Image (cartoon, rainbow, N blue to C red; front, side):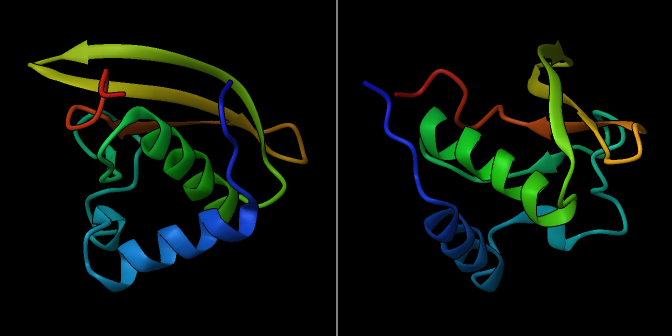
Length: 106
């Protein structure tokens, strides 16, 4: 049975990462998630934390947007989640997350 964290716990988790300087989206000048080269790096120790942090990032940075599609990409020895979201006005956006450090870890 898979656990789900509450949105409040997710926000606290992400705020803690940002405050500790561990969440690389702070380097917003280069990590916008628009390509694999500028993928958002969300540190986690396992897939549960990583996926939860990805969705938390999207919820925090794109409120009201909905998850449309997700795929796994391997490129140059790295592993990425490619997540497509749809805004309230129907605009689609793709965000790349570098998941190399935690992909496949229980």
